[in-house]
Image (cartoon, rainbow over all chains, first blue to last red; front, side, top):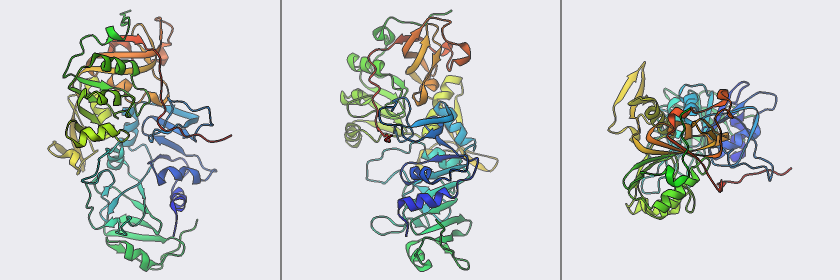
Length: 217
Length: 232
């Protein structure tokens, strides 16, 4: 079983040379720490920067330089700044190669819910609806089950949707799963996790074909 | 040169009235029009509809207007950092229209550029699209989103000249350029106001034609919401 860093480490393997990548808040943010240093990747933050760098050194933080999580950041050589329309133009126009975000629920048809729980204070969708409606390559980073132990990989989402039929891959503490026309297809198991455990934690249709390899981290 | 300068924030906000719709630039607390917000608090105008990506924090930004119950309706993409906001929303005092961030940007830009509406894929199949016109283009579904209509746009830029030409800094740019010219009157506050000719025309982000009033702001606090650093 993986921890949050393990999930991020596995997702980092999906990041390829020359990719522009948008990272959501939470586990997705950790992915940047695990991207191979022999490839060239630029991180986009939808509030208006490409070429986002690490946090600034103590004392060098700048109120005019933040990421979508409102954290102070730095700009790497080759970075650029732009307004929010251009930022979402990059996203809507499918110029961003990979979007990694968290979710409360994913359905076997690729629907995603990650912005609203009825009866609870709704904070808003931010850029999530724009990202999931447009990106071609969307990887969800999340835990396989919620705190009550219920599966988050469902036949149909029960929560209000963020987007429809959009998720391509899911990486959890248990497995790597591809979203296909026929349902969730199991690609890899986390170290020490059995196919049976993954089946038990997955409410939606889980397709298991042949031997399922263990993740290499 | 057509001069856009006004003496001060008081003159910049002349004509602001109860019940108006305001656009306010900024993402989180970055690039917010601090001087104009302070003046709106002093003027104590009520029943405002505010279009702004976020709603400030409890004691800064739009949180200051919320605290005095000056806002009737908030149009934002994310409003998470504000306890007073939550209280007013849950009690029904405050009307909230949540809009995807890219759609919010597009609706401002549409108003700026004379498009009555734009099609976006964001929100299709979700409650955001309920009651809205949808349409298939090449096998993908889109939602028709109308341009905003606003009385005032309050914008913060880094540098500006007397002709109203603007340059923004870093990620404080965000929604600010899109709100210029998107309202009947665009009020811009800058950290540094210079004479015409001092800014390189090649470097201008927003030409002065989109600006009605410009003034040099004062006492910028530029508060940081999430101070994240690493050690040397």
